[in-house]
Image 1 (tube, rainbow, N blue to C red):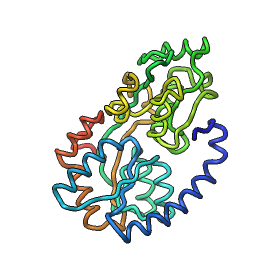
Image 2 (cartoon, rainbow, N blue to C red; image 1 turned 45 degrees about the vertical axis):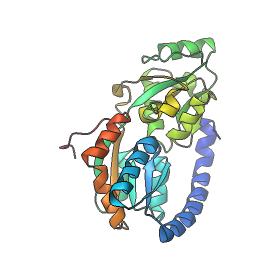
Image 3 (spheres, rainbow, N blue to C red; image 1 turned 90 degrees about the vertical axis):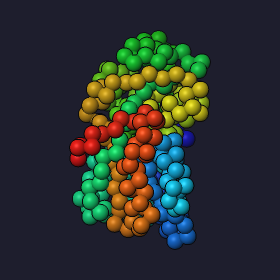
Length: 272
């Protein structure tokens, strides 16, 4: 379900607390019974699933992946969620957890995300990187709904907001926004045609299952320089051997090649 921006701001703390309590109970049971639970940003849905499948084949050990908004995961981890590894789309969330003594260290930068303008087939919008057609469409009424992840807790939502502000479109489009709980849900809104378009992760828009439903164009990272999509992974203090092995595997060349294929930019190995 999507929420208008003002309503989302009002109800999100209540919903987040309720979801957190339910998730804590589920994860505690899951951790005792099976593979280590891993929290991963929604933009990693396709890339990390592929990496985990290869890891299981090579190591004989499985991990349990959960995908969602990085902000929600950070909140859950602060309140005791038993994830053993966190792959965040916002490195500052990792730093926040580290500063509270919940992680083994300050983690490693594993990827840099990219944002695209996605337009579903049949939309009156054009996939225009300069957003000129979006500006015109807001003026002539072609845009009724536009999807982004919720900026309150999703890094891609904040990056999308920064892009729209850079283009001078935020005030005109704010009332038309439909907010996904995560970048993946925002992608669903746009790909299904529930909105005329959206600002979404390249890693999701470029997946074959999604790309066939529309077209997209890359947005300059300079347009959201204030909200860089620097993605960091970190081991929690509770991490066991399998989570530690997966943490190491994600940084190996084979896994890094998967990230590149799914549209991520790799950080320089020398980058802290």
